[in-house]
Length: 304
Picture 1 (cartoon, one colour):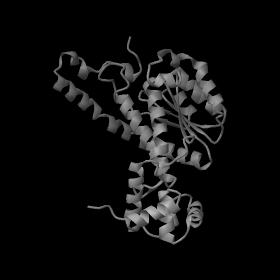
Picture 2 (tube, rainbow, N blue to C red; picture 1 turned 60 degrees about the horizontal axis):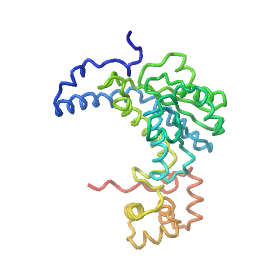
Picture 3 (tube, rainbow, N blue to C red; picture 1 turned 180 degrees about the horizontal axis):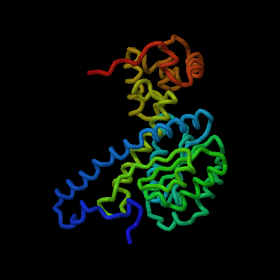
Picture 4 (cartoon, rainbow, N blue to C red; picture 1 turned 90 degrees about the vertical axis):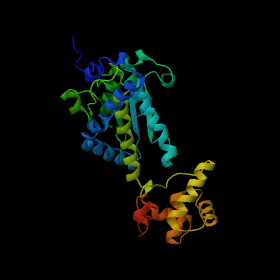
């Protein structure tokens, strides 16, 4: 019997891949991977809505919480873990829940996705409420743990969404605030959703969190200005950004960052407005954290 889930169907284009040479395998997988961005592009409006919901959530002091199992869960945890170092965000803002807990990150806990009650339990333990946004991630669209978590979040008044790579029932679509469903088609190896479905999921999650962080003012143009210089690499990057935006010398950039408590964003506003740290923070708060609204000029042009 044919499985109705697209991610579980056999791919006719890879039926003889076991006879292929290494180069032929590369070419076949690459041809399939090229289909992924097109599938994601069909969901542009839905992803934009998720960005809006995430921004609203953050401005209300809420959290974006991903819930998934297996590869989907790992991708949620990965995206959440990368937000603090990239955007200087509080680790609480974006969180990832994976069926089976932290051990499932490095060793498969295949049965965990079927323990329905644990999905709702995780939501309860995190005290999810109306200010939060919970996104379920399920490549096949049918993971019981994920649906239980999303349903419980909805009962508690949270905004909800789902990311899947197989068609969802209308009932599921209607039950969430946003459904993002890039149909990536059958996998190169049947059911191996760490491949095309995983790639599509990573692209979608990147867009949601990056888009929301941009809307919160954590970039200036395309410069990463809300980072903090916590190691030598970030210290150098911080100084270079301040130099590029303000035109000051390296020594002046270091002095500005010291006075700004290592905050690139604050240092830029201090220099541009000629104010101290307190004045810069006040200006940023009035501007909703967005540098472009706090200072009159545009960011520097991109070097050729």
